[in-house]
Image (cartoon, rainbow, N blue to C red; front, side, top):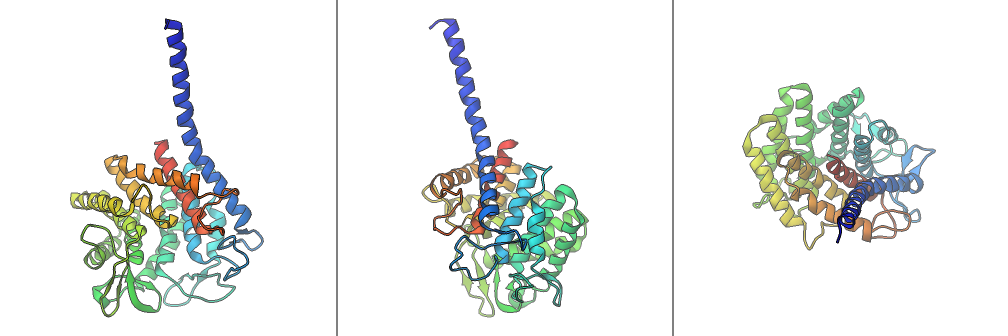
Length: 360
């Protein structure tokens, strides 16, 4: 082969590599845009400024979505704004969430369904997911509303703590039968973020207290986390969901960044190894996309410290398979014929976070 031919081959090789890399980068961005468009077209009540639970209009329980899918949607749009800081995606979801506001004593919070349609329950974890998204957004743009609402939710969390089982946050207001990892892990994250912003040690003390309680009662020996503890029997429900391990993994990373105490980093690495071994089986994560989105948050937090791409690669493998195998002709995600808002929002978050990692 002469020198000219070698040169041409080298140019072709470089172009192929660059095109493949660009295609991968554009791939996640296009996934995000297509999912967001599908939500706008199929799952949005434009007139009411609200969202629908799913595309199954024949069997819908309510006229509009429960709050929980909006918890996924507000985080998804936060990640979209992180990628495109000149655009506004969160405002539409914020306005919807505002319609779930309920100011009943002891402190205002968001109920689990649209307030003007009926009064309903208030869950500590639903409110916590909103505060987490708002605090992430506040760290980007310092919008006062985000900090004010997060402080309000912190007060609501405090109303859910008592001495039963030695502490910890209940799952649902007025229901004193369980204290769950899904209400305690996020509470730690909120308190730590508020501490970082305000330097008020009350928040740090709260975070450490809940952290110690959760580890004492709800951590499995290998490092992952159980679902809940029953009150007053103290029986542990040993189901393990990805999001519970995700919040506690992220909590350890955040505690390390705040305190520089390496015990938290060591624990984060132990949890990460246990979580991957427990949940990534036969090349796939469990089926709940949003639970996995929360798990990804913890692994990305650790990756930002130790730069171990193994923590990201298995999420990419799963996310790529979801797009290839679990997407319909409307570019909506899910194994069932009816497509759920929470699933679309979860996958927006996952693709956006993976895109952000690729961009760095």
